[in-house]
Length: 173
Image 1 (cartoon, rainbow, N blue to C red):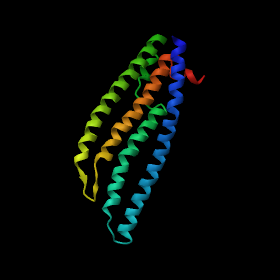
Image 2 (tube, one colour):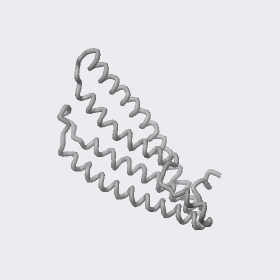
Image 3 (spheres, rainbow, N blue to C red):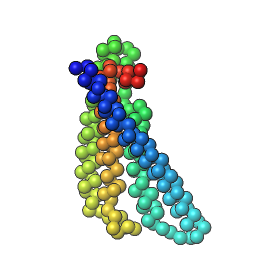
């Protein structure tokens, strides 16, 4: 049973590695776009006295995608909910149990946030952006369920690794 869990954990880890790399490239691309859009908006307003509202709207659409992908990248790097300050007072099995409980609760919360944010995204289909009449707010709200989904997958991988190896870093040894 333990060997099957370890194999499953390795397979999930290998499967999530391309997702994490893609998230990191997306963060870089979105950040560069945001920097370029804000600078273009400033130059157009200050130098040429032109106002292009679509630049501001596109930057506002990119910002939540950048935020959720950066949060998912933080999850992948280990910045996730935990109770490390209490764990040293517990025995080894107690520490493992608390870590598993935290990971399972994190999965539940991310799953619920994904469902709720998907409902918001569906409601965003009815609202259009004024400077871009063809575009609804759906892409803006869609960033939330996609980001929570990425965080869920990364958290699931961590949970499986924790259950299979008994600790967060034993698979790298």
